[in-house]
Length: 104
Image (cartoon, rainbow, N blue to C red; front, side, top):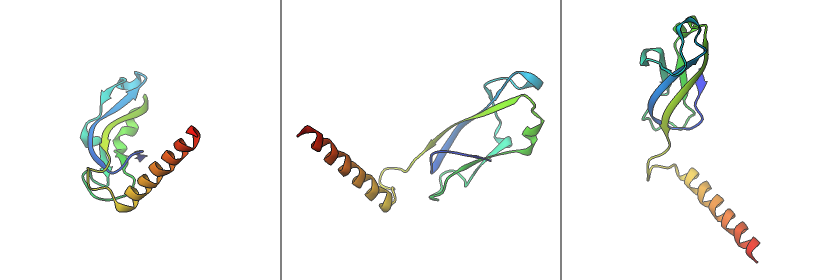
């Protein structure tokens, strides 16, 4: 289980296996979708961190050193939760006030 930093995840473009060349694992090899899943499913309105769940079959790769995930995440325009939108506006106002204070 690997937590993804951004959420909500809308699309996973690719998952790469990075290896050191041992046991047939080459660096940059694309991982097939049968070997991973996203929890919760993509394109949901769930406001929880998303997790990349790897198949136990990957344990057989002894040369596996890292996993690289390329994905899209974030809220679509107009669908940002009200509390998050309010917090962003407060942060922007605080930054503007701080900037104006330096100019005087």
